[in-house]
Image (tube, rainbow, N blue to C red; front, top):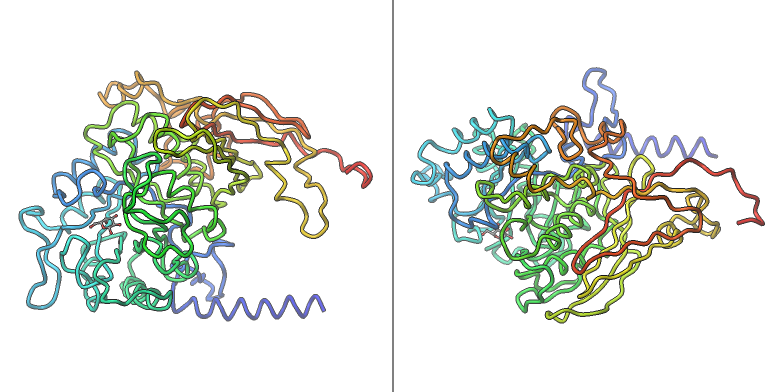
Length: 509
Ligand code: GAL
């Protein structure tokens, strides 16, 4: 019986893989011709983006003011500041880059903004060891009223592939009413998905339809990430009528001017729909744009990383302050984001308390299981005053109970070492030296990491100290972890088991 089920599922898997052949060569081992899942558990429709994409996008800081100089100087600055080697390797150009279509129907780049053409930019970015991202809309116009790609999908995908483009951010404006149900949106976005795939070039497909028609339910079969909210704005928690929804699911109008806390609190309902190859995109990072305090920006970065959001820096790299560089450069936080578990965090509890001047105040505990068995906990204080916050072992692990049997999970009988993941934050002096080009930090520094040389997955496996933070204590079985967390701050800790406890008898459970 077991054998029958096993062989049935193998047949089903083979059929699925057969379909995948048409979709993507990378699922198949061509050397043997045998269908084989190259990365077990990967759900990526095209084999790309098994961990969230990282990079930079001009929109949050520059809006339509994009040009060749900005893109190339940013790429060079990212190399010089070590950001490329921390993993930020996509330079993504946003809206307002074209002037129309030529008589053959091909998009034409603005010759004033891009005097040497976009292919030239792509080549130069590749020469720096980085990748290049393009922007368009699944509509007749982009949101900035430049030509969109609806009806021109194949032609546009072919053009971008000929330019060497590695990434497409695909927006939702002017979609001619082809939205309003998941099927309408799926069909429209799928045309571009197929066109990109047909180019034969590896192009990460980043959907930007703001959570419209619940993309987290269907887009993993056609794309590599999908925005799950209206546009972010540089505010920690200020409510805004232009961002009316507090939940992702069933949001009739995603809008814009969504705060960090608004977007974050939309994630728990769709936590299970984040997976390797398809990430819920919480929008581009605002760190450096001036609207939030240092600790608020730390919350923003930490919770985006914790939820496997794409990490796209959204500020002017040329004027990045030491404090903001230190936030973007914490490898212990980036390692969470780049963990091959590729999941989002679970919000274990949330209490609405102690409001600030915006009328908002809350505290919450978030946890996430890492691929190597570590557990990460985030104690988030979004209330108005410092709080002593507690996480009991039961809070942290109760969702690991054996389904149906209600047995205590084995994690509860283990002792866990606790590592503070912000304890090695680069000092202002160190960060200033990196910016000035006078840094003497080596790659073995606890505040630097070279992911180009050694992936985060390998680094974690080797217990690289830059990825582990600083050990601040341990939690005994049935214990409680407590930390004082300042207003609008987060404490984030990687928990590592000291080893399996000996199994307890049933009456001890
Ligand atoms: C919005 C999108 C933004 C930005 C903008 C460009 O729809 O969410 O991230 O791309 O369009 O016009």
